[in-house]
Every structure is written in C-alpha cells, then in structure tokens.
Image (cartoon, rainbow, N blue to C red; front, side, top):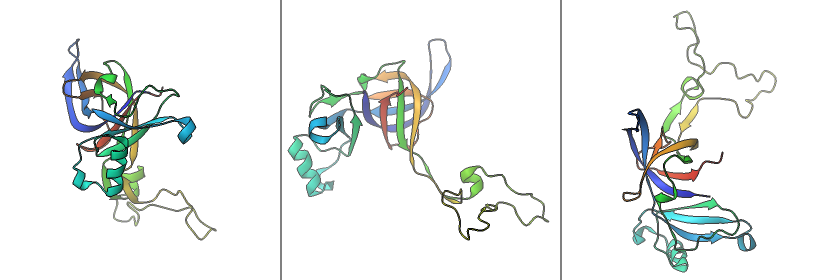
Length: 206
C-alpha cells in the first residue's frame, strides 16, 4: 500500500502535452517518517504509522515526548496509520517521500471538508422550498417530520444543523505531475479541506 501524508497548498492550472488546460490541486506530500510498524503477531493487524510536519518539542506533552523518544525518531505534528500487506519491508525511521507516486497513477485523497456552520434544510440537504408568494405561510421550513403517532422525531431525519467539517474521501484522482525536489504532488480536480489542512494520500482502492 502506497500512502503518504501532506497538506493542501491550493489550486492552480497546468497545460498538458496537447495544450489542454487542466485544473489541479497542489499538495505538499511528505517527507514522512515511519514512527511505528504494527504486526499481526504483536498488535493483531499489519499497519505502518507515519508522522508528518514539524512541531516544537515545547508543544508536546510528556507522554508524546516519551513516545517519540522510545521510537528514536524526531517528533512530528501529525501521526496516522495505514494498513499494509503482511511482511512489509518498512522499518522505523524510514523516510516516505512523494516519489512513491508517479504521473498517471490514481490516488484517493482524504481530508476534512470546509465547515459551513449552522445551515437550514435547503442548504444542507437540498430540500425544495415552498411558494414565494405572500399568501404562503411556508417558505424555507423543514416541512412535515412524518411522526404522526410516535410523538417524537425519528432518528436519522434530515434536519437543519451543522454542515461540513467532516471527513471526506475523494477517490480516483489522477496524478498529473510529481516534483520530488519540492515535495509537491499535483492531482486532477478538487481535494477536500482548506489551505494548509492535513490530507492523507493513498493509492486508489479500485
């Protein structure tokens, strides 16, 4: 499993060999450090824990400092695990760089979507609004809650509430270009999250 952590830089556009304009998202991917290796015998599953981003030691708690010291690696801002096949060759202290991917490959990118705050049913769930005329007493309300005899609202009912700021995965994004010198990865299309937010990049699952 090829995977790496990075952060979203922003969007731009590039031209391909045929002169076609391509919208791309620029991601700063890696370098990441392998902090821990999970095995089936010891942990019950096979995975690799990697760290990304600089963090000052004064911002770490004592347990965090002790954890990184026990592994013998430099502290990182983020830690994430990725499942791997049994018998992975990666070891603690190895570096994972952006050149694990190449142009033309497809990746899945996971991030935290933009928060939109408290939103009504029309914005949050694409409900249809009521008549706009002055005689109508119903314009942007949620409508009937369909709980005639239950005397309560059923769980899972689409209602106004907090929108966005949730984990989102966009699948099958094509890698347009890779710049190993600047640790940059250009992928076709949009990626969830704000500028500077953490993203997880994995080879496409399908």
